[in-house]
Structures are given as structure tokens and as C-alpha cells.
Length: 454
Image (cartoon, rainbow, N blue to C red; front, side, top):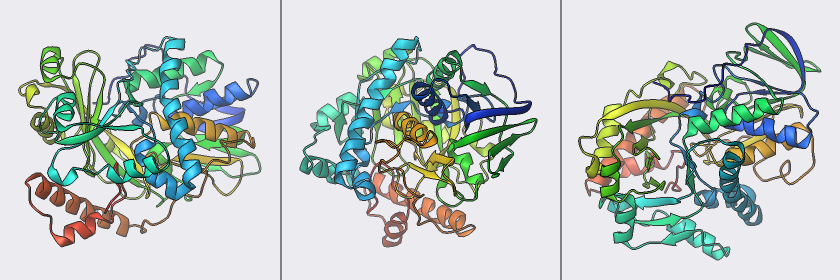
């Protein structure tokens, strides 16, 4: 099932007929809602309309792992894309953005379970040990030390399992209940006069002098359109082939607070290992464990179909990894599972760009790290949509979509071959064996995750 949307507010209306707006935002997830709120802050008189294909927050924003992370772990990629000075600025502001989510939730009474208890970046086999070293060294050369080294025993204690052999800790990360946060943003947007239409997918984009967004039963004419559709943005010609859509699968246990306590998982810490098909998990405020694994189903072209919705088809396999990494939870049954799409860019970073004209803009490519950085994305897209010349419209992530992916069907077929090689390599490393030369070479073709690909 999809992760439940716990906000009890009634559905917004379907778009029907003709509407006119200053800015029309297509997509009612984190990026779209933060953009709408920022536009409202900068120009309160602007009429902003948000369109969502289903319910605001029901896409990837409402069914992710709940990690609110910074850009510090992506510093090397930021440095390559933007230069050292801008990489440092963006990483610092991304840390402030995570804190601002907590402030926003407290100010508006959003019970998102925000817990600023940090992120543990670990190794769960010997091949992963030191995966963070190049990032940490580059940061130290730049005068920043967001990652604290920990002794192996401390890593195991904080992670709740001796399967975690080494790691570093970043205090600036947090965790949230993602669906509650998404619906809270929706509520605040409505309270501020932002208009939201649900069950109103974009079925056509009119690139006339005044842009038009068509839905099954209506149309919005606007002086500016923002595309904030996550993986579904692949339907637009300029974005097709500029990222890979891959599934991430999450399982959620029944409440087991005593088991979590016994394992040492007493707060809202977030934990990831250092494989490409990453394992990531967090204790919830009601005593459950939410555990996810990347590297699931791969989309062909722009076809983000039903295989990216509903219960996880890999729930049993994901749960087996969970019980292996957290043996204290052995026998605790699952309460739910779900799957969601990740818009993985070639360099692991989001991009914000115009689509042939300055009044049509898009932001995507968060690559599985959107909860925190989408706050910055909202600032960037708002400044671009309002044609403001400021630090956001000129920032280093305002750039053309990164290139490097082959066209279809090579992208899909090649992606399947690379994904299989990654799985074989990681199975070998888990067993203490050296992966084959060909699997190492094929793995190097994969877009990076937490760790730069060798």
C-alpha cells in the first residue's frame, strides 16, 4: 500500500474549467509546496495554483524513508558541479534547511515526528570501510568537519547491531514522518491562500505566448509554470533521458519499542550503509523500524507505471536484509510496505533549469535525497519563477540537466545489466570475496549514490 496520508483535511477540488494564475506549479509534493510557500512569502499578492495528479503529498514525498539530510555527503559532486566556494555555501545552507523544517513544523503545529538526532554513515562489510574518507578529507581541506569519526564499538552501539563495522556521524541530519510533513505543508499552503487542485494531472502543456497547463477537465493559463513532478517529469521532451527512474522499497515493522530499546535505538537517528543499493533505516517515534533498500525496479523511458505504486514487490527480500542487519528485531512482523520512484541524476545532484523559455522551469533529480534539499529547491524555483536576480536564481544548481545517459532502449537494457552487476558485486563483498573485474567495471557506470563510484 502507499504510505498513509494521515492529514484528515478533505480533498481539494478537481480542476474544472479555465483558471488564470501568476504561477502554476505542476506537482504537489515537497518541491512544489515549498516553491508555492516561498512565492507566497516573496509576493503575497501572486495567485499561485498547484496541480497534483492524485493527492498532494501522495507521490515520492509521502512515501520515502523519512531522512531529512544535508548535502555534506555529496560535497565532492557539488564541488565538481559548482566549484568549492559554491559547494560550501550550498552544503551549509542545506544544513540550515534541515533545521528550518523543524522550526516550520513547530510554528505550524505539524506533528511530523521531526527528530534532529543525526545520521550514521556506516560500513556493513569490509569493502565499505572508509567509503566516506574522500568526502571527509575534501571537507577538512575546505575547513569543514560535519562528520565525526567514531570507534567501531560506538558505531555498532548507535546502529543497534554489530553488523555495522565502522562509520562516521553527521549531527545535522533529522528524521520525519514524510506523509505527515507533506500534508502539513499542504495545509499551510491552503491557509495562506495558495490554491490546490487534486486529481488533476497535467495532460498537455501549451507552449503558447501565455503558457497553458491542461488537465482532463480544465486548463490553467499562467505567466510562469514550474514543473515539480519528480520522476514523472520524464514525460517532457527536454527532460526525457536526463535521469534514471529507479524504485526504492521500504518496509515498516509493527511497534516493538522494547526490541528497539534493547538494540540501543533510542532516538530518531538515521542510518545508511555504503553500498550502491543502499540499506537505510530509522526508528520511528511510535517504536517501529522503517527500513528501505535502493536499487529496485527500473523504469523504461518515461513510463513510471503502477510498479512504482502500492506494496513493495520486494518486501520479503527487504525484510530479510533488515532482520540480518538488526537481529534484535527477529520475529517482529511487518505492518506495511511500499515502493516509490527515485529520479536519479547522473551526478546524484538536483538540477533547476529552464525548458526552452524563461517562464517554463523545472526542478528535479534529487536522487533519493529530497526531504531536506527540497527546501532549497523551493527557494531556487521561486526566485526563478518570479524572475528575481538573487543568490538562489544564480546558484550553482541552476544548470542544464547533466548529460551522460544513453538513449532508450540502451538506457533501460544497460541499466538492467549494470544493476545486476551491482547486485553481484555487493553479494560478493558481503561474503568477503573480491568481485569480478567485469562487475567492478560495470558498477563504475552506475550513477553515484552516497559514495562516489570507483
